[in-house]
Length: 253
Ligand code: BT5
Image 1 (tube, rainbow, N blue to C red):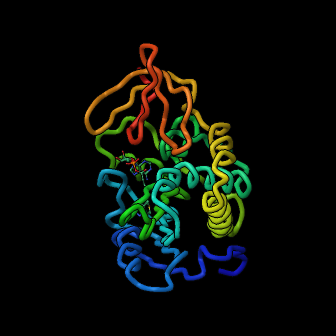
Image 2: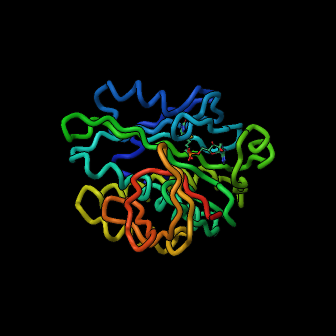
């Protein structure tokens, strides 16, 4: 943790060589006191997961981490975290590795439309209060795309990876990401969300595109015209505007 400049996030860091999923470990930690801001990092995950329990391929070399937060605000902010986290990561990658990434709603970071990182938020909400938030981040770093793609079945996009620029850039990237995450977290806590949204839109590849959105119940086609203040995607279709809270989107229509 030498060089880490945060106040809350990363006060405790748990390292593992191999773990089932950093997300699962964070879930167990959430029951303990004094774990607000704890970070769990693993070199390799045997059962990394994505949204809807999809498999997240996590070979050695990548950055697989979870951040446990126990924020004291109401649950309406929860939906902003995928956006805020992907923005924080995109900024950190730019600062440390000098690489531009694009943000694909709701939670992907891409390079040339290939997925380089994914974000998963697990939350527990009790009577409108957030008990805990677990922010899971998977970054393909120093891994061969083929090591990942051969383990993905129904693949509808390519995979990109980041490579080490100089000694220590992996550590620096993690530290910078935690700092940027704390920054957006504080902005959400103090209600400054429009700033996050404007920055997210600037880096987004989604807004303005015709998209196909697949939700758990339907497939929708339309034009992505913006996001609302909760982070929902606004889809324009036959002159009507529809709000999407969760979906998988594709730029093929
Ligand atoms: C995500 O899900 O993108 C969220 C990924 C979160 C992973 C982190 S790692 C640390 C923490 N611990 C965990 O167990 N998870 C979190 P989703 O949008 O549902 O995307 C999942 C889909 O991405 C899969 O169905 C595959 O098609 C594809 N995929 C799997 N592994 C990949 C990889 N390493 N790189 C790019 N795409 C991948």
